Image 1 (cartoon, one colour):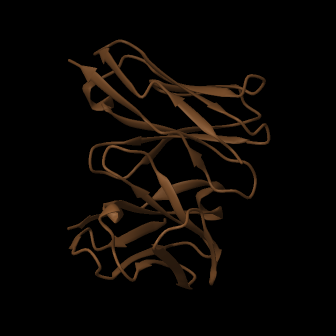
Image 2 (cartoon, one colour; image 1 turned 180 degrees about the horizontal axis):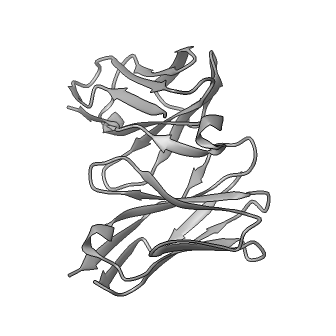
Length: 115
Length: 111
């Protein structure tokens, strides 16, 4: 079966500091990977998605970036955090092992607070 | 691109009553419609989905209906229980694109 991990689970960072969030998926090969942000009490905002190593699509302009150095690893980064970057960051995957590449499964999330 | 509208944004029902959440989509090429449930502080979890070649799908107390002509789909929860209280998201997808989510509905089941 497939498992998705995210770390850290919670993070408190000062404004202007860098950020690195990591997501890994087990039990699948060549998954589609996604990063979402969810502000408090709000919906799911798609930030980036990747269909393969080194292939990143950005959905919104921002001070965040994403990389996929390995098949099952997806990293979200920032050089300088803003207050508005606070939120719940969710990684998700989809792939044929789940029966369809359409269905997305979410990781446990990272709660980021920027002070 | 696809646009998904979801309503209502909040819904309160008495325990045992039914709850209905509706979504409309804009892209007639969309062919897959999942529903996710997100409890407070947790990740969204898939609860039911439907493909465009099916009009209705049921799983115990949960059902989803799809009207392709009108481009809308609905989630029906019968005999609601307090543990059904959560935020529910609908989504739509057409081939080769990521899911597009609605803004969510906060369901409160009052005991």
